[in-house]
Image (cartoon, rainbow, N blue to C red; front, side, top):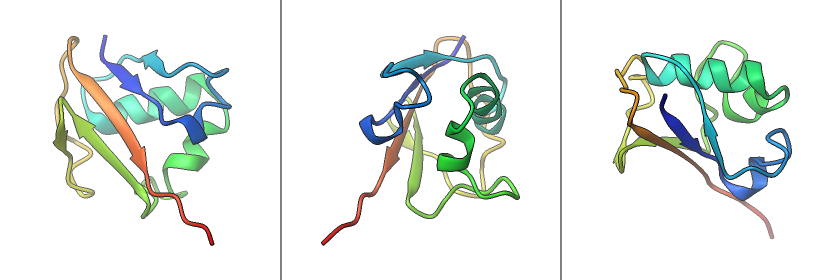
Length: 89
């Protein structure tokens, strides 16, 4: 089952957990499973149509996934990492 590394600002819906295991054959399916199992997280990661928010980037095994390539296949031992840009002043 792929594991997803959650950035600190998004750990509220995961109960503070930094790593969550999800089941899905693609990056998009893993994100959907993550959103389903952790209410409130999906809204932080994706727009209502399913596209990633513009400040969210996903990596698989250290390689950045193109925003248009959420159909990228993942395996049971893969690691997804979510990064988010933070803004402030």
